[in-house]
Every structure is written in C-alpha cells, then in structure tokens.
Image (cartoon, rainbow, N blue to C red; front, side):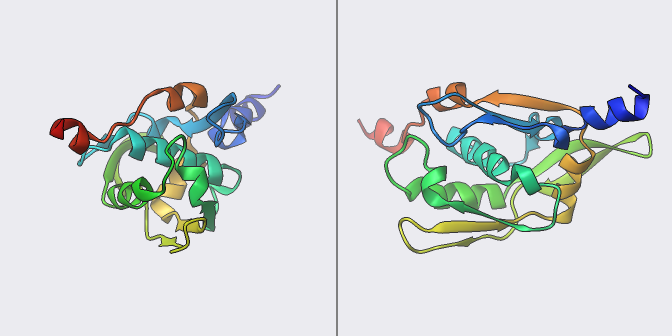
Length: 170
C-alpha cells in the first residue's frame, strides 16, 4: 500500500461507527474526531450535554464533512431519560459553547475557536425533530482529522445524569 493510500485510509472520515448508538440497551460505537474529544470549553458542559453532542455527531457522521442540515428525532437524543425537557437546555448550552481545538494547516499547529453547535430548528411537537446545520469552521475539523476515538455507547449510557437541583433540595 502506498503512503498516500495509507494516509487516506487513516483519515477520520473514512471510519464508521458500529451498532446502533441510539439504543442504550445494545452495543454501539461512535467515531469522534480526536480534535473534538479533548476540547477546552469556556463554559462547562453537563454529562447530558456531552452525550447529546456525541449522538449529534453519530447522527451526522455519514455526511458530517458536508455543508448540509442534519435532522434528528428528539426521541433519539433523550437516551435513557423519559422526557424531552433536557434536550432544549442541552442544545442551548451547546450553542453557547465555544470550543478551543488544535488544528493543523500547512504543517503548522493552530488554535481554533469554534462554536460547538450553530443555529437549530426544533419542532414543537413532542415526537418531532431537530434540524442542525454545522458551520464551515466546524465541518473543516472532521474533514481534516487524522486522529479519532471510538466511543463505546454502552459506557456512555452507564453514567447517570442527575438533576442536581432536586438532589440538593432533599
């Protein structure tokens, strides 16, 4: 295999997830660009926010390098939680999060500051969809990524998300 062919097969976008990442009861894997694994966010994200972001990546993966609007059912984002009430607050926190990632351009390292999630349209119906475009600056990250992680969804769903407000009131 030539060095160019080897480099092409190692690119992050060439990787595929496994199983169904939206089913907490079954095995699944999500491919995530390494640049988005160890991000430095200016505002802390909750466990639910991070889980929803991983599911958004999994949902968009087949076309994540393209400037398209990705559509996802709200039911796919709620995970093991019964209701949809966490989704809106998580999407708002993700929209307000500026991530600082290291990227490489022309053989040099740069620090990129990018909004994790751009504008979104969320259906007002309980069983509706959210539509989420990605900014060109964010799309470029998986397009150029050569380092990735495989997130095991069984582990991702094992962590419990607690409502800290009701826990502190007890």
